[in-house]
Length: 216
Image (cartoon, rainbow, N blue to C red; front, side):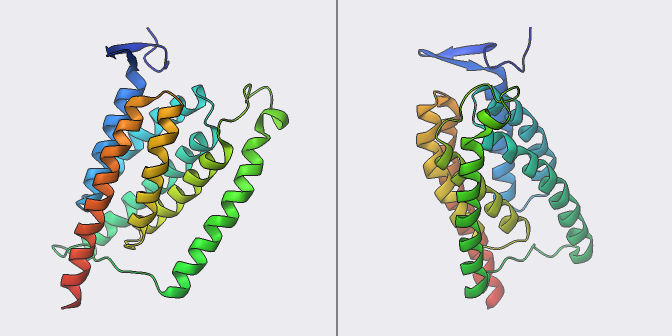
């Protein structure tokens, strides 16, 4: 039995067939987001396991930008793990401090996100033309796929360097993902993003509370 195949079903919930890979990837991702909202360093090894499973899953459902997104997550998770470990050693028992970027930094980040989204949209719209042997099907919802991918890159980077605005990006990504995954018929993941939306709001509240306390 191939547990990495999306057609290998673990259980049917109502009329929805839930695969092993979707279930395990989703649960691990859910745990990693909870851990990062609590500023827990274990978020990184848990997240690495999740992105490996998601890379395989997204290839199978032709969300190629989301697939490539997992490569970025894999690399930045390793970097984040090293960075947070070093910070923990330097700060001993101090909490990981968070902050907002300057107005200029926020504007430049938003502009870069928009530009990269447009470039990625063009690219993934043509993957099946440029590399037909690998991408046998045309990409689904290329703009939304590209937008959530680039915004996720931005959000992951910002939370890795402990910038509060990263949670705003996560909130927007979660709202879009809820609809996108529902339409793509990976409904378990869609429901997960409803929960992740709540957790992103919670994470922002926790980080902001620490930021406010740190200013006093």
